[in-house]
Image (cartoon, rainbow, N blue to C red):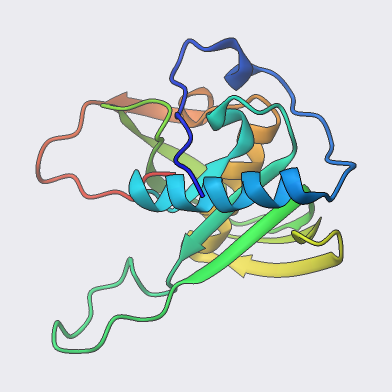
Length: 175
């Protein structure tokens, strides 16, 4: 495994729609492993292939449900779930939308308030090319929407109602 270089705005690949993945070969498995390592090192909760200069419909997401909630500090941390989504598609979205603060590894130094669907359903392929479906809500739904936007050339700043430089008091998960 190797760390990949994360590209930043105004890199043109961030504004292009990524191509579907068609070959599930050793090179793809290496890319997935590299992206997971890069996301963890950054650190972030998600990383889309265009962010490492690869124009493919692939994203990795790792998040523990409840990370965003205030909990007993003595409680053990919840285990993180790792998702690899290839050629993802949002098949259903709730009418209810919620505002939330987002950041992005490709847009360092800025965060913004973004309205997203509270709940979504996603169909995709896993790292082996097998179909998978997810019913998501809350922050997990937000992360998936953010990563799928990346695959379509859309950045959180395109959807944000306001964008600002965070202070030390601002806590947000970065994709």
